[in-house]
Image (cartoon, rainbow, N blue to C red; front, side, top):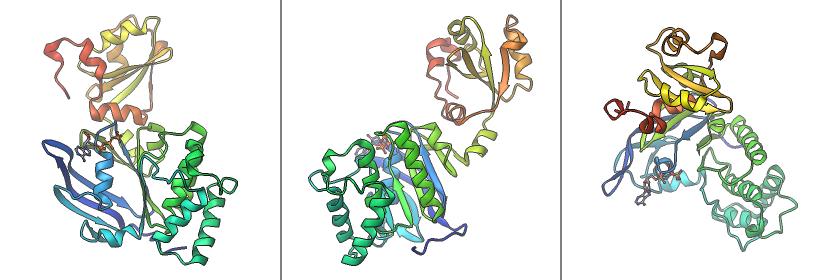
Length: 327
Ligand SMILES: Nc1ncnc2c1ncn2[C@@H]1O[C@H](COP(=O)(O)OP(=O)(O)OP(=O)(O)O)[C@@H](O)[C@H]1O
């Protein structure tokens, strides 16, 4: 067991973090505080700046502006020392296809200068934890997606990292492997490892202790999933109706409606919090809706995402131009 903190100290503290690539602002003025021992998620679409942020936080990329402290070290100045204390699982898993599972682990163990005994013990432990004993002699290039993911996580854990950076670790695996992977993350977190993980998946984001919702290089909202849902600024109403497609496009003409998404036989409608009685208001604008066709339900993280990012692409196509300004 390594010396992992359990107090409320910060594993990551970044202020005003900014990265420009030419005229493109990939990350803008990011403030980030990740508590030690927490699983912190970056949730956002492709290209919103998640990987760029991780690369700055690990010292691989120099910020255009801002300050970074990771595990109490100033980055990028102390990046070399930091590398011994963190693990980084990249999107591509970074495995050597023509080495076996065991050889991949042995190679990384050499990079971390583990003694032969330490290396043997640690590799045995990781092969067992990540269910790779049977594949130990198999070439990494021939592993399934889930096995590659587990090997990649095992490689990231060889140095007993205090902090793990995981860049979209589950995008290439099936739902069962995703669930198992998250169980492994919770085990790591329980043993004191801090984790920063990027994801596109709402259900994964919901499992994090803390979360930043990113869009176009900005953090649009952050907090625990529950905090974010409490502070969402919209009521969620589920509507059942025979003609949901038409109802949806008509509802979207109202400014008070932030989004309407069809979920099977229901429409999930986000009504601005400024409306104090959303059910009454909805029946006022759509008197044909019967009371048993509408009900208020608790928000989920996807509702938060839509609200804070203004990602209501449907509105643009259904709304009159004069009322289509972004929120
Ligand atoms: N080295 C680079 N040179 C120029 N532009 C870059 C570079 N690295 C990233 N970008 C751009 O910065 C933006 C953010 O990219 P980034 O990889 O951080 O996004 P992401 O949120 O991780 O996306 P994804 O989920 O697809 O991995 C993108 O527009 C990308 O093209």
